[in-house]
Length: 177
Ligand SMILES: Nc1nc2c(ncn2[C@@H]2O[C@H](COP(=O)(O)OP(=O)(O)O)[C@@H](O)[C@H]2O)c(=O)[nH]1
Ligand SMILES: [Mg+2]
Image (cartoon, rainbow, N blue to C red; front, side, top):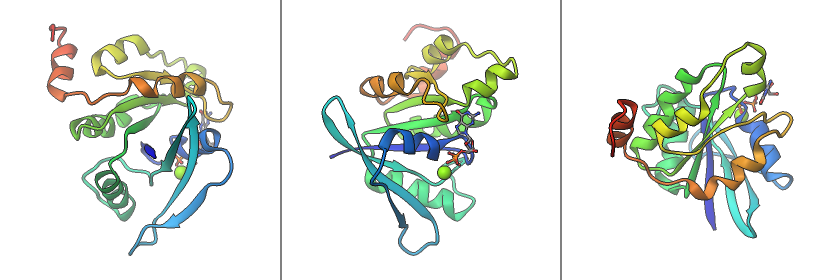
C-alpha cells in the first residue's frame, strides 16, 4: 500500500487534517522505545487505498527532542510515497524550513497552507501561485477545521514529485531551469 505522511511543526493542524482525511479506524501507536505516539489510518485516493500517518510535530529533521527524532526516523525508515508538509499560513517562513529539509531529502511533497482562515482574518496575503512556482510543488490553501481546500489537496497528491533544492534556488532568483 502506498504511504502518505503528514509532517509539520506542532500546532499547525496536522491532526485535524489527518482526522478529516482518514475518517474512522485510526490507530494510535507508541513508537518503539519511546513515549512518542503516532497515528495511522487508511484513506482512499482515486479508488486506491493509501496508508496515512500523522507524524509527531517537528521544526526540523535535525532533531532537538524525542518527537522530532521519531518524525525523522519514521520518514527515513518507512519511505513515504508522498509527504504533505503542513504549514501554518500565518507563519509561513517558520514552516518552510522543514519543508525545504523534506525536499532536500528527496520526498515528493505537497504543501498544505493550513489555517488560511486565520491568515485571511489577519490580512496576511500569500501569493500561492508564486510560492508554488518557486518551490516547484503543489501548494494548496486549507482550513482543516472546516474541510475547505481538502478536495484540492487530495487531488494534487498525484502531482507530488521529488524536487531538487538547486532548482528551487535557481527559480527563486528567476532563472530558467
Ligand atoms: N482557525 C483554524 N484552526 C485550526 C485549523 N486547523 C487546525 N486548527 C486548530 O489548531 C489547533 C491545533 O491543531 P492540531 O491538529 O492539534 O495541530 P497539530 O499539533 O499539528 O496536530 C487546534 O485547536 C485546531 O482546532 C485551521 O485550518 N484553522
Ligand atoms: Mg497532532
